[in-house]
Length: 88
Image (cartoon, rainbow, N blue to C red; front, side, top):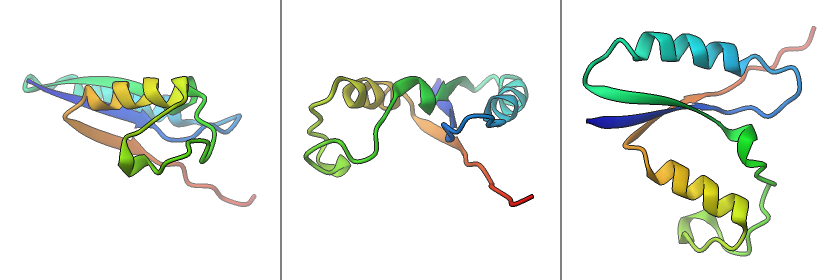
C-alpha cells in the first residue's frame, strides 16, 4: 500500500494550512489504496540553509534535518500545501 504525506508548507504565525490539510486528509482517507498522514513542516524547526552540503547530497549533519529526511523518506508520494499570500 502506498504511503502519502500531506505536507503543510507554511510556518508563519496565523497560517491556515492545518485546516486545509485536515480537509484534504478527510477526503484522501476515503481511499482504500493508500495511507495518508499530515506532516507539518513547522514541527521540524528547519532553519533555512543551515546544512554545510546541499540537500541533493543527502549528507545531513543537524538533528532536525536528519529527522525531517527520515520522515520524508518513509513516504511514496507527497501532497504539498503551499500558502498564497495576499495584501489586504
